[in-house]
Length: 336
Image 1 (tube, rainbow, N blue to C red):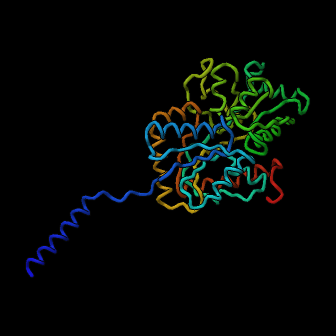
Image 2: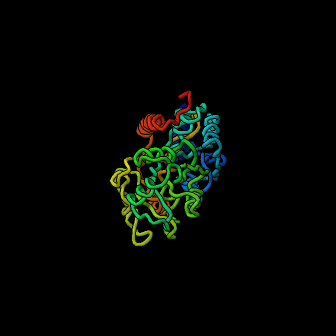
Image 3: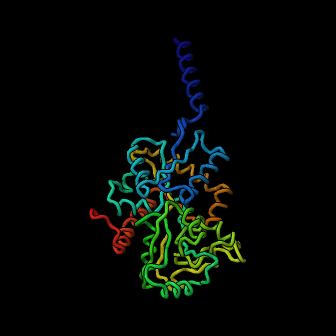
C-alpha cells in the first residue's frame, strides 16, 4: 500500500511538472490564407495601405499564413462590405475601410451598416488636400478661388473618387464656400484622379496626400490647402523646398471645411475575442516597423491608433457626422 501511494504521488508530481514546463496553448491564429478586402479600386489610398501592410507582413514574417489583397470596388465599395457582412464567423477575412463605410450605405440604401462588422482597429486618419495642376497660374487658394468665381458656373471640373462619397461631399462644401458650381467628375480610385489632373482632364481635385505625392514630387501637381484644423506636421521637403507642413489649412485660406478620413480594420460578424486580439496584435507589430513609419510619413497621415470600445465610439460619432454632411449635400438615399 505504501509503495502504491508513493507511485501515485510520483505520478501526480510528474504530471504537474510536465504541465508547468509545457508551453501554453496558443491563442487563435489563422490556419489558411487571410483575404484582405479593399472596398475601392487599385491605386487609391486604401489599396496602397493594404498592399503596404501585405508587404510588411511578408517581409517581417508576421503571419504564418499569406495575406491576400482583393479589391472589391463595385457599388462604391458596397460589394466589399456586403461580402464581409455575409461571411459571419469567418475570421480569415478582414476589410480596410475608408469613408465609404458611411457614405455608401447612406447614399445607396444598401442593407449594410458598420455595426454589421466587427471593429478591430483604427490604423490612421487620412488627410484631404485641394490639388491643382502645377502648370496652372494659381499658386494660392485665393488665386484658385478668384479663377473659379470668374469662370462660368459648371465650367470648372473637379475630379474625385466615386459619387456621393467623401470627395464629392468636400466638393459641395467648397462650392458653398466659393459661391459657384463645379462639374464633378468621379473616378474609380485616387490614383486615377491624380493622373487625370496631371493630364489637365480636370481643373482641380480633392485627393489624399499619398495619392498625389509622387506627382507633386515630380513637379506635375501643386497642393493648395489641407482640409484639417491644423497644418500637417511633416517637414521634410518634397518639391521646391516645401513639405507638408507648408501647406496651409483650407479654413485659414478661406475655404471653411474640415474633413479627415478613417483608415481602419474590421472583421466579419461573430468574430471571437481571441480572433480580434490576434489582428490587434498583428497591427501593433506592423505599426512598429520602419516601413510603416516611413509610409505614414510619406503619406502625411495622422497616426491616431484606436481599438476596442474607444474605436467603436469614434466610428459611431463619424457615422452621425456623415449623415448630417450628406443630408446637407442632398446625397441621402430615400430610405435614409
